Every structure is written in C-alpha cells, then in structure tokens.
Image (tube, rainbow, N blue to C red):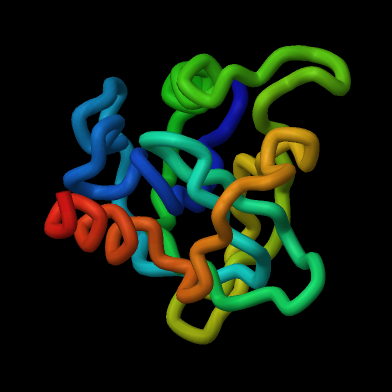
Length: 136
C-alpha cells in the first residue's frame, strides 16, 4: 500500500488561498513552513515556481504530509498530464523545513509558461497576492 508523502505548496494551495489544501479531502497534516531556491512568477490568479535558475531567491511555502488519495487530487488541480505540455511537472526534492531537509513533492511550472511573466522578487505568493488585493 502506498505511503503518505510530503508536499511543498507555495501558491493558491497555501492556508487561506483560493485552493487551500486544508479544505481538501482527505485532510493533510501540516508539518511546517518550508523554503526552496527558485524563481516565482505571477501567471494570472496563481503563481508558478521555476526551481533554481538565474538569480534564484528563497521561495517560501508550507509543507504537508498527504495521502496518495490527496496527492491524486493535487495532480488534478495542478493539471499534471504526461508529456512536455503539462502545465506543471511534479518533482521530488529536499525542502528546508526549520533547518532540516524533508523530501517533498514540488509542482514546478513548465518553463514555457513563464516566458514574459512578471517575476515575484521576494518569493512569497501570499505576500504578493495580499499586496495586489490592497492595490485594486
């Protein structure tokens, strides 16, 4: 039987976001705040994370333990499909959680989707999206 895995969520799946992972079933278990190095982009009402890259910043997010059933739901939300045209690609990598690495699934944006998109220099989607709401 497949075991639970960890996932790093950095955008609308974060607590209070449009797709808050805590509203999904089966319920995840919160582990802590995490960080990865990459470039965060504003695509529309949601972000995309490109891992590494030129001048990466610290991208912050939340780490949860998820069941295989919830992982399948996340794959649907992130539009994971076979082949190079998927909107996101699912990666597994160590995420820093309170100074210790935890192997996590990370949904990385397809590089073709970020061409010409605005980069979020501070790496925090919640901070960025709350600022955008205050400007509107």
